[in-house]
Length: 114
Length: 111
Image: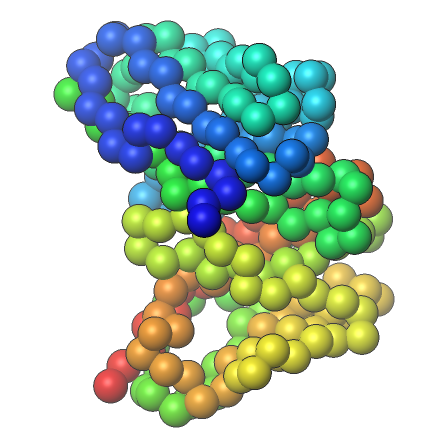
């Protein structure tokens, strides 16, 4: 069973039309991440939540916002998508209480901007 | 200097070959180390955690050299299904929050 679930798997939007991507997890992990991955590049961290504490990366544009209403859910809001925001968006979780602390990824949401 | 660097690739090898990937990291305080595998248009999946003592899982062997700040992945008897991008991931702390990704090395195993 999937432990990190992302919806939608594929999202097509128009230039400037807001988009929300969701992520839910059944692992009860306290840390949740959003990564952006473009073709042939490594995932790029946008921000992460450590419990309720929001940690934004310095180079994440203001166009990207996030919400974590509870432990299980996290949302990525793209307020005004541009053509350059077309990418795979990966949600991941980790736990600070585990021995190895690896990242668990969802299957990703692929965003197309027309 | 990038925080995590990997062999640029791509690696094109015949089935049955042995292939080794290298990864170096710049932060000597790094605490945890991983190899992830990512298939085309899929999410990264954990292949192996890497420990100082080295670890092996079937055809895969990972090594960590803290003194040289170097991680390796060896794949023996490569299969067509091993074709993927291999990402070296370094955890900067023991708190499970800060991970740095290498750029990835692409492997194609050819029939």
